[in-house]
Image (cartoon, rainbow, N blue to C red; front, side, top):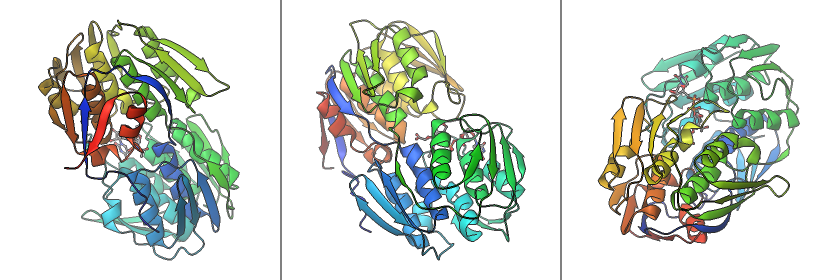
Length: 429
Ligand code: EPZ
């Protein structure tokens, strides 16, 4: 399979700032929904068709891992076909595993299908400690034998058996891992304190369409009864709620207006509430799956926003809200309660003129500040996207290196912001 054409892998982004965004843009398929669904295709002995698959590097890495395991992969634009009939290799190549966090859920999928897997500790964005103890706890409960040597994990199981699993706190990935390992296991698995992010619902819906027996979708208590086999299906990936939130927050920061097409409205209540409370006019057209946002001259910060598990304010939009808060009136206390190191962007924003006081897991942002364009460095996915927003609202020229991080989750952030009128381009290094 040719590498998915992830555009502009090592280019810079250059932005001429202070441009209000105006226009409409379609929301791409969801990275965090499609990755577990691609992993779930390993469980199905036949050809699945996945439509609206975003063309991003994390998808490319996941498809390469499936191909190395023996799947046949075809990819035409946003349609990916995966035939896992010929699955033959349980050892997965570290060069792709190390690229992203979501490789870890291949443990559950491989155990579910061939009862063995050899995989390195997953990589991914450096946004703080990212242990996998809850993943391993769940898989051990299902009867897996797991040996770890250095950063190499070997797991196997004669036969996975359903179990009662109580997570001390909800983890998206750990919940997905247990779901993937238990749908073909013997007997019943009950998960308490399961994550309730939409990406859990879409995984369960995909698996149920393929013949899995899962109850409690949308709640923190899932009951999975193992079945003998799953059958191939065709599936449309939901739109990306974080990409949609990115474009709304950028438009608010630039005092512009936007119409989001194919927006995942049902997954965006919290961010829409926050933007309305800040003074944005928002019209939601459910039938047409459109969100219209208009932003006058003034928007005002809320005193406190704290990231939380779903349906709270998503940690993945924390950096994007941080930049919007710099341009709004008043001060915002922004508390990060999910990850321990998700303020890497602060030093770059200070270089652009922001006044931000950092105190452990929270930052105090002084609003009403003018940013000045600078050469800045993206160090992780969502912080990189937030630097693009900062460049759009800053006075003068901003160039961003480290765009490969941004391309992990955004099909073409330059293409989309250009459609909204930003003076933005890819540049050769
Ligand atoms: C998923 O990461 C998403 N990634 C993240 O999006 C998202 O920020 C996160 O969920 C929270 O919503 C994908 O879906 C590919 P967690 P995940 O397990 O599964 C701790 C993006 O920008 N934890 O819910 O890794 C962990 O350290 C990415 O698209 C343990 O302690 O998140 C974190 O503090 C970034 N032990 C917290 O739980 C474990 O075994 C939440 O992590 C697992 C997690």
